[in-house]
Image (cartoon, rainbow, N blue to C red):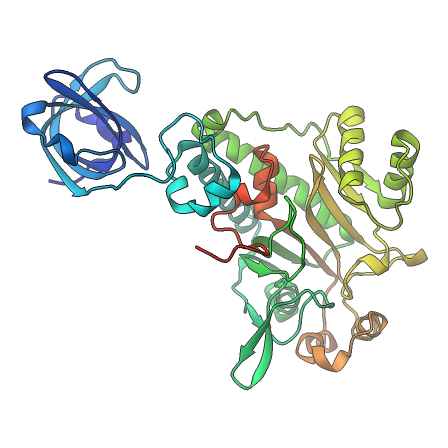
Length: 428
């Protein structure tokens, strides 16, 4: 008999079916036992006569196969239930390290992550990643509809894309290599190769010695690069459309998860505000008396400018533009007065995107590499394509875990990370 998923049982009233899943809850009476079974699609109440079961083997979270008839019956889960004719224990569960079938998983984040796989059986934790999946699907859909090509680039590289020392070394046969900080070079190379519009969703690696609620050493980056642009505002406008598309998709497809997590999605009415970084620093100083910000915002500054934008424009997002050259990588298109054609997108007090226009002139790129104190000879495989015709182009990168955490009001980015990697955690 073919297995039926729980969310399809409504189509089998008065029929015999087979379901398989985990035992979510047990309530034993004198003559019968109520067993709630869970699969990925939902919960179903099942009823069995006690003479047909071996109660010692029926334990919470054991995996079972059940054959029985579907009958109409109003209960707290569904207007129907399964009357068990046969129940088989596929795998008996031992005592659980954490109680995953309570309404709230009231243990510390450390305990949750130490028991990560079993913790994901909790409905609120699984809801996080169901919504995260919608975010990724929406990102892909939006770009594919606009003729972008999905690419898959190496994660073992000879140099870091961002420069600096925040890279993980890898012994690569007789050579030293590094884990990729970003697909940046490859995105640009593929624009120059003639694809014009490319994107990638993949893991990236940063050897930053942070241990905060917003940083990870391995995370998923949603990257895109677009050729034949006018300037960075083409990228900003594209991302604004993208964010609106993602929000609409989550609202439409993620209703169940949003309800479980008690989340109301933010609304974007009109355009997302755009503020030059220098102006943002001025606003923070005058309005909130926060001084000594030079060329960038610290985490508190990001929260304050988002607070200002929320109060003034009723928007949870803000684009900050024209970051100084010293704060941007070597490939960033410069502006006069040591500015750049770059931007960040902040969402509820946290930066979730960095992007901008890139340098497309070979000589300018070589000089920019030198200005960063780097050796252009180490980047020849990247810079070579710029000799042979490179259009004006730009792009961005969105941290998947960060946008998920901010969207769902999570306190720590690790909550939005399936299997976190930070300074202290390398298992499971």
